[in-house]
Image (cartoon, rainbow, N blue to C red; front, side):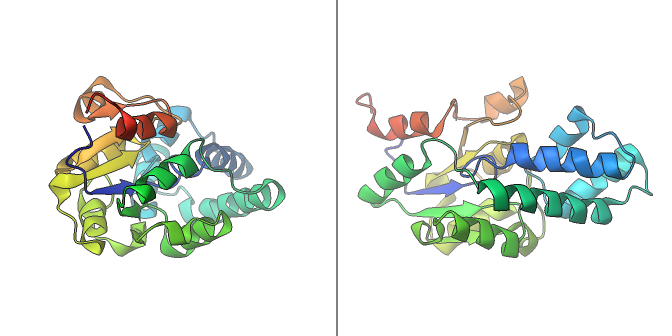
Length: 221
């Protein structure tokens, strides 16, 4: 399955970093402080989306007067307090997968909906910045996931043919975007299991990055 793969594009939150649960808890607390109930079904719609897209989703559901940016600032503060106290956890299997790809000379790029300053800070804190050839952030592209823009931009960083790129994603929006980019989408679900439609778009749906690593070591190839 990996014979023709020449590069791997990684999502960040929920895929490399185990941060989505913190983000969700922080959103719920911030929403409660502002007098809103952050419904699970609504929150799941914004997983993997850029800030602007998330704003539109929330306002479509809660109304045009939804104080998105004020609430987001509070959410960031809450999450920051948690990270300062507990650190930023990585997903299991990340380091082992990175080690293997480096052994095989496979270039790696990050494609995250998170804004540049926040993405760089997170990767720097966990010590992973230098393990990637580069990254594309959500505020650097015209159209966020599920559009293919961010993945195509990531491939350009290393001059990789999209048809020979594997994309690792935890979100449905990411899998849709990778498929639209003509890449090989592999999903490692985090907070939400994929719908049947999204599952059909993915080359594989795997429980962990250890299982992704196994794709590269399979004797069946």
